[in-house]
Amino acid sequence: MKPSLEHFFKLLLLLALGGVTMHVPDANVLSSLGALHLDGHFSFHDVPAMARDFGNRCSFLPAAVLHPGSVSDIAATVGHVFSLGERSPLTVAARGHGHSLMGQSQAAGGIVVRMESLRSDTLHVHDGMSPFVDAPGGELWINVLHETLKYGLAPKSWTDYLHLTVGGTLSNAGVSGQAFRHGPQVSNVNQLEIVTGRGDVVTCSPEENTDLFYAALGGLGQFGIITRARIALEPAPKMVRWIRVLYSDFAGFTEDQEMLIMAENTFDYIEGFVIINRTGILNNWRTSFKPQDPVQASHFQSDGRVLYCLELTKNFNSDDTDIMEQVSSSFPLDRDVDM
View 1 (cartoon, rainbow, N blue to C red):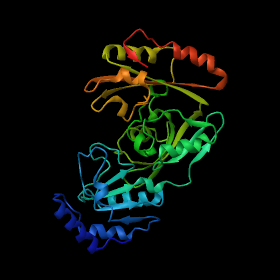
View 2 (view 1 turned 90 degrees about the vertical axis):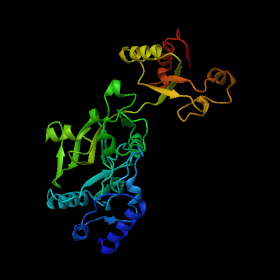
View 3 (view 1 turned 30 degrees about the vertical axis):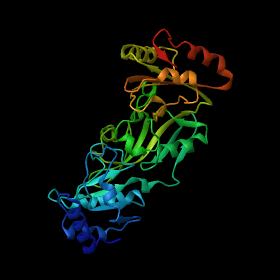
């Protein structure tokens, strides 16, 4: 789709009505995007939606949105912007599921790349001694999990929320309750495909283009756009015991968390978080306590209090039930906690 003067003037009107002050690229600059041969397309009707992210603290309207049909679309667009030179105001930002906090997935007057447009049937799972999955940068982690589970495998490290893109979390860190054991998600990547700031498509790994590999992981997109990642896998557990422990004492909460992380025979997932109990713990989105259980509910008459929670899981198979019970029962209960 070729950007037109009509689209350009509509954008100006949108900016004026919205009270947004920003620099808009010259119409000729936008029109030059129409000369690019793409498998996907540029759009303009969804520009306002691309000016928001999860943080809701920044709002920068882009001039256009790229819906890439291939990695070469991203490379051609970034290469074109690079060719305009340093004086061009046109910028590019990759957007996954928009969970940035300070506008990192927005581009004021520039081009936002909708990475989720790259989601396709290109998830390739390789089992064997060192299993891995090749996933597009715009694929959601929940879809990666569903595909790898078909082979009895799963990624080693997660984030708490799986409806995020592979490239998005790898551009940050990807931290969750498995990080104490396996490290964050960026520590479990074997290879990346990256579109650099010049528009080159580069494959990198700990052995190849090493500097770019480690710079892009956790680099907030400043060293290139991650378009594919090779992610290490491990056998998926057959069963999981899930335990949540509430604390009213911060010192006891942190001491137990440190003890469990350092223990030799411990849980597979350990994460702590704080609950500000404004509406009642039973209504909190992270709770697993059931309102119909009067024994449990009686412990949580704590509106307005700050509570601390440890979330723990232990993986096991059906023939390991006795071992699992021993580990679960070893949790210290001599503190003021609720399980």
